[in-house]
Each structure stands twice: as C-alpha cells, then as structure tokens.
Length: 220
Image 1 (cartoon, rainbow, N blue to C red):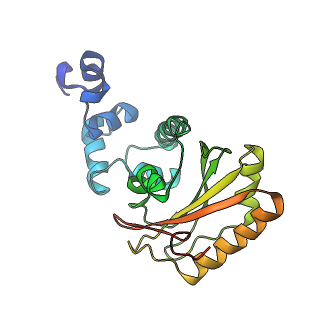
Image 2 (spheres, one colour):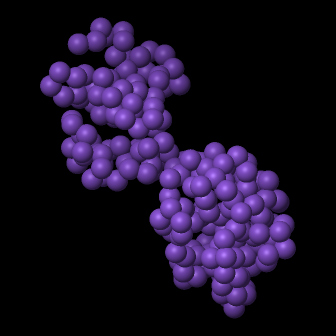
C-alpha cells in the first residue's frame, strides 16, 4: 500500500488537481486496484498499453475498457462519464469564440482531431456574427471515409438556430488534401443548406500539423 502522502486522492486534496500526473488522475477514477496491483499501478499499466496518453479514453468503448483486468462496467461507465463532462466543459468555453477564418478552426480543433485514428466528421454551428454556438460530431467512419447525411448536419443547425455551419473532418493518414468523395459530400451539403437557408461557409480537413480549406482552394 502506498504511504498516505503519495496516494493520488490525498495528493489532490493537499496540493490541487493540477499537480497530479495522468496516471494519478486515472487512479482516482478507478478507485480500487486488483489483486497484486494498486489503483495507481493499474492506471499506469492501462496508460502504458495506450501510448501513455489519456486521449484513448475518448475513443475507447465501454466494452473495450472492461477488457482491462480490474475495470468492470461500473468503472468503465465512470471513466466515460468523466470524459464526456470534460468535453462538454470544453464546448461551453468554445462557445465564446468567433470564427473568422480557416486558421481559427485550425487553432480550435487541430490538436484534438489530428490524433484520431478514424475519420470524424464534425460541424461547427455559428450565429449570424460568426460566434460559435455548438460543436457536434456528426459521423465517425472508417479509416478512409465518414458517411454524412444532410439530415444529421442540419437538424442540429435548426434546433440551435444556427445561421451557418463549417464542416470539419480529419484524415488519419495525415494528408489533408480533399478526396473526390470529400468534395462531393461538401457540395451535397451546400445544396441542402441552400434549400433551408443555412449557409455552409467552408469545409476544413485536418491532417498532421496541416489543414486544407476547400473554400480557399476554390472547390466550393
């Protein structure tokens, strides 16, 4: 058993959450270890299996989490709930932003999306002044494509009274150049938006440390 002054929960209470390592934060959520492993040792083992980053928690399903010894459905649910709370807090902060250029989108989403191992299609919903109202993951696809239906994009735009949208998705290959499918999907969404009076301002593709704007390329 760890000495009391080295236990993650006591360390947090004593010095604040910012002083804890990723493994210590994870250990607090795990709460209890397994036979032969403390909660901290179990957290360190899980992180080591996922490249040492907490980012895996966003991508990993409940079923995949429960494959780890010591992580049952209740603990897996707690971990996923913690990730979702963090995501929603992040969105609340981002709602204050005004999007004026593709660079603004890059600064907002690059670090989050360039590490994703599958294509994620995300939509930024904006008010009439370009203020960010909401961000939503509309589709999660395979390594080569994300299937997007106009209904899924614009139902949230209507619900949130958005005046316009910006489409964003990542290329896990790291190359942000648009495919023929990317251009076709974009044009289909532009046509659908025109019918209901919601403008598609741009489609940004995120790669590894670089991005591509279909509008800047003259493709839309």
